[in-house]
Image (cartoon, rainbow, N blue to C red; front, top):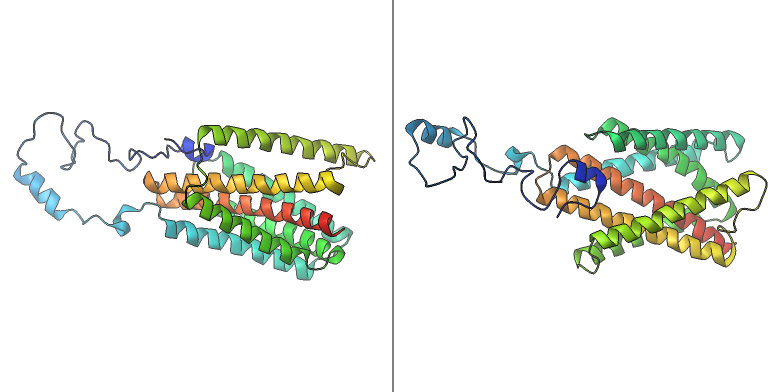
Length: 281
């Protein structure tokens, strides 16, 4: 079964071992380990010498993605987000200048994320650049929310951690299974959610009060749906990481896993901030 994540699917991640080269097929030139169709034969002296001189198989030699690789790179990416947020929090004012820098940082982060999404190989510079600019945006926004609702950013961080832990436990215990039906239903809801957000912004931009999606009972319901969608994205991230490790993905692909997890966690944090603001208003 191929990964439900479209980026990983383009790279051939699947639960089969074809990515790692374990499939059986015609003998490869110069490869004494290749399987031959038909009856077994005796190895020649040259083939035996090549086998004994070959390095022993192990995690160091294989260069395949492991869960440790994912954890380390996710830590680096999230750490970069935190550094950018702290710099913005303590250096940028919660005013017109700070808002302008936050908006510019958000645009740059979006562009870097889109470029990485369309590349065939992960680029750590793009991923860490996205994390830094996204962190600056989050720092200004968090400071703004904290000025209006003291302690809201801390509550949002705790809520994000709780959602992450809950989804990880649910996924590992198989309470949640990422199937094609699950993926299609979740993506349909996500598309509708984004379209409603854009419509709300357009109405607000032309002097209206929007569609009421960020206030009152409707705003609370909309915020809960946003958090649940973030949890859905996390389940897709867990699935693509599992498929990548089982399929023998290259070690560098762990940067993509870190990128996906960071984007999902940022989504959940922002939705948590909005939901907390509505509940405390």
